[in-house]
Image (cartoon, rainbow, N blue to C red):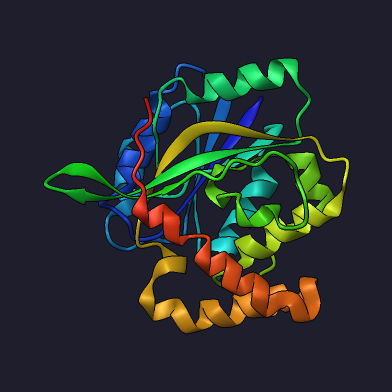
Length: 253
């Protein structure tokens, strides 16, 4: 089995079906879809049960946050590569997995990442709010600033080597994971694919105004751990680097 696509969800009945449908449309079928529900109580469970399909493995149990749910899902995964597709996110092209598989058929990459589009619904249509496209020509210690976590295909055995997501970070564990991954091995075979992978729903955990203080604390703690007293300059650069994303809207053809 080539791919394990992981969807973590809790109380998101308005969006979970969009995610499931976007994956079911894929022309490449060598994947499993692990849906991990954190004991939803709003009707999400019923929607998932009504829309299970052959490729889906569905689990529902309490967890201590999104990263624990992701870790549990990774442990269950049977695929060679892991890809996270959160509830509300949608794969843009029905040929997406085929394109990734074609790359891997001829190249033994450890990691692949690409571009994403953030969206909100307006008048029942997808409205692009932000474009993340940051071409990467050479991997270095700052590459993590350019990689959208939700575009990452990563070998499961690589995750086994570097470890799972750190549960001490409730919001920014993805950033810590990317930095740790980037520092883990200079010989990692990484490929930046200049292609838009997914529509990512705006307004997630890390962008919520209610979580701003906790995210700031976690970001700074992580950056200080890995970069010492350069952390404040790296954080400022991280924030400023996102500004062009909001000023430019792109379309995927």
